[in-house]
Length: 345
Image 1 (cartoon, one colour):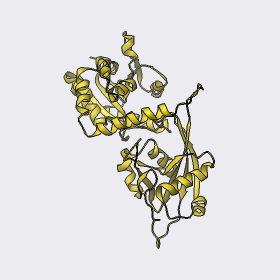
Image 2 (image 1 turned 180 degrees about the vertical axis):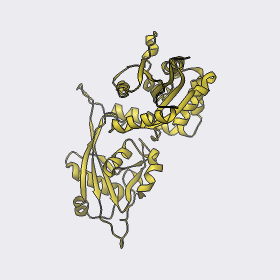
Image 3 (image 1 turned 90 degrees about the vertical axis):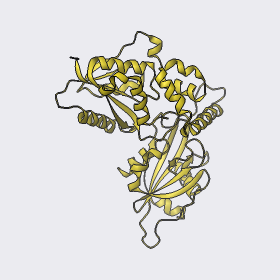
Image 4 (image 1 turned 45 degrees about the vertical axis):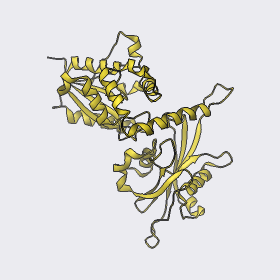
C-alpha cells in the first residue's frame, strides 16, 4: 500500500524533459494514482505552448507504458490576472477526480524558481518535495529545450527521453511546425533588433488595445503578420511617441478596422480602461498594454457598424459574444483575458 491514494503533479510540460519524467516517476512511487494537471489549456499554439493538452498526454503516456492506467490527465486554463480562478479550477478538477472527500492526497513538486510559487496555494493537501541528486537534470529548462528544438539544434535530444524525441521528430512533419518555426525566427530577430545599445536595460514596449462591443458582439481582427499570424486579436498597436494613450488606441482602432463610427462617438463611448502588465504576456519582450472598453449604443435600424481589415489586420469582423468560448484557443497573447476582464465573462 502506498502512502497516498492520489499524487498531483502540475506543469505545462512543453515538452516533457528528463527532470519532469523523474518527477512523475517519483509521484508514482508515492501514490496509487497520479493526477497530471496540464497547464495552458485552450491557449493558442505558439513557440511557448506548441503542444495541445492531448498531445502532451500522448507524450507522457508514451514514457510510462507500464503505468498508463495509473495516470489521470486533466487540463486547466491559464488565468494570468486572477490566481483565485486558477486555484479554484485546479481544486475542482482534483475534487472531481478523487473518489471521496477524505482521500489521501499529496501535491508533488519542487521550488525551482519564482514560477513555482503555485506550490504554496494548496494547503489542504500534503506536500511532497521532489529531489533529484543530479543537479544538471534538476536545472533543465523547457524554454531552452524549445529554443534548441525550433532552432534545429539537435542538442535538445540530450534532455528528453527517446519516446519524447520520437514525438518531437514526428511533430516536425505536421502542418503546425512550419508556422511555429517561422514565428520562432521572427521573434529571435525581433528581440535582437529591439535591444538597447550601450545601456544595461532591456526595452519595455507600450501598446494600446480596444475592446469594442455592440449588441452582443465584439470587434476583433485576424492578424496578418507574425507574431501570431492568423490568430484573433483585439485591434491595437504600439503607442506613438507623440500621442496620448487614448488617442493612440482610437487611431489604431480606426486603422485596423476602418470602423464606420466617428472619432468623437468612439471617444464618448469609452466606459473603462485598464493596464495589463503580466510580465510574460508577450513573447516579443516586456510589453505593457493599456486597454479601453468602448461600448457602442445598440442601433436596430443601422445594425453593427461596417468594418474592414486594414494596416496589420488581415480581416476585421464582429464576433458574437457566445462564440468566445469556442474561439478562445485562437486568440493572440492574453487578449481573451483582457476581454473577459471588461465583460465579466
